[in-house]
Image 1: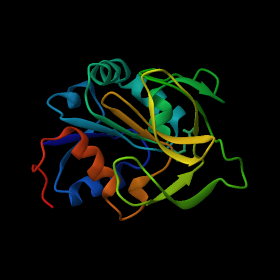
Image 2: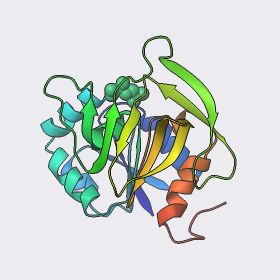
Image 3: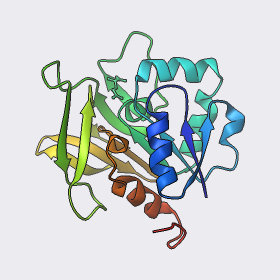
Length: 197
Ligand code: GLN
């Protein structure tokens, strides 16, 4: 099993580390050729405007969009989630996204006071609450018909979604040493028993 980590900007090392601790091999994805032969891909958090610009500069945006649209299992966190969204509120001028996840996200939804915070969060597919770090995080404000909420901060704020083979979270599971969110993602598509326990 080999998982690509989009390595243009942001929390690349943290996601690779989490996957390596689960005995999953990773490849850094910067060029279209890096997409070949992947079993899944992770889009880290960081800054969605920078990820967008670099992906277009490297000619990666369209092949990446096509691979995800074709069903490549995908885990996106924070800026990675924004980068997948069909609709972005508070987008920077000229900011583009891959438009493969039928949601509306509001960027920097927690304002300056709550710029960053950590909480325990229930996530579908994980037995007990997980530590979730929010850093200038987005909130998902609208879900298209094929999209399911898989994590909520409260009644009105969705912070995790699933659409087909795409899972996206507003927070950063890779900031904690708790591997259950990455494991649940892998388990959702990999043949059982492939991972070392
Ligand atoms: N606010 C950032 C953006 O809009 C996302 C922050 C993050 O990924 N931690 O891209």
